[in-house]
Amino acid sequence: MSRGAEIAAGLAAVDERVQRACAAAGRSRAEVTVVVVTKTFPVADIRLLAELGVQDIGENRDQEAAPKAADCADLGLTWHFVGQLQTNKARSVARYASAVHSVDRPRLVDALAAAAAANDRLVGCLVQVSLDDDRQRRLGRGGVSADQVMDLADRIAARSRLQLLGVMAVAPLDADPAVAFDRLAGVAAAVRIRHPGATWISAGMSEDLEAAIAAGATHLRVGSAILGRRATAG
Figure 1 (cartoon, helix red, strand yellow):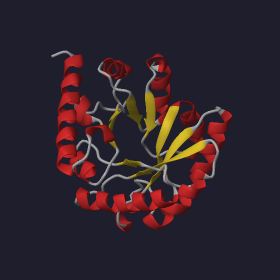
Figure 2: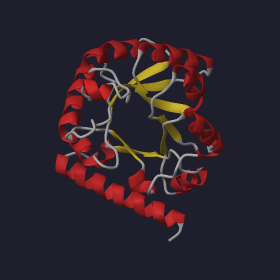
Figure 3: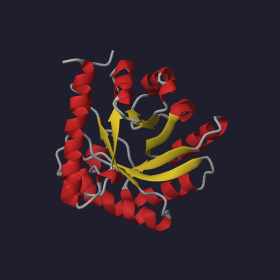
Figure 4: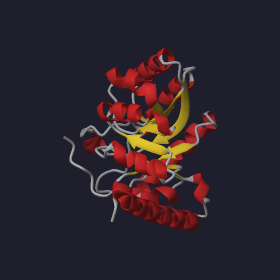
């Protein structure tokens, strides 16, 4: 089987899962965007994805994402930065990313606002919400606690070159993702009361996308279920 056929089969299988989950949740398939996470996969795979109609690409390391975005500039893709972001990488990420899913501290908001202005761009931002317990939070997966979300959302919304899109979370390790994503949905609803345009809920990956859709996710971050076993980073 060619690489293009492998990727097409992965896309079809994920789309079938998404359609079934949307039907079970009483939602329209059009409400859910699949962001294909291509970390460690080559530019050739991204070009194949584009040929198959994929527009939304996710990356989690600027060192890898920046050259890929430059190589694929002719494709008109929408780039999503989905990993933890160091403040000193904000200027680079603001050059290509339309959405940063992992905004989790005030200094990063400030850095992204300055970088967006310097690059004359509007950068969408999602507040990353930690659904982990205190022990897991110490492992450094990123995100702010629920009681800090509104302050960070307000800070993003106040910046002219940033657009508050919504919230993002990763399901906790060794926990029921359905319970976690229901908590995220509650946080998202509270944010929307103050910021009605913040409609995105970025949640769900290859293993738990059904639970995320049931809880109202609008954006899924899917890699291995589409592209196969992740390549070893070198």
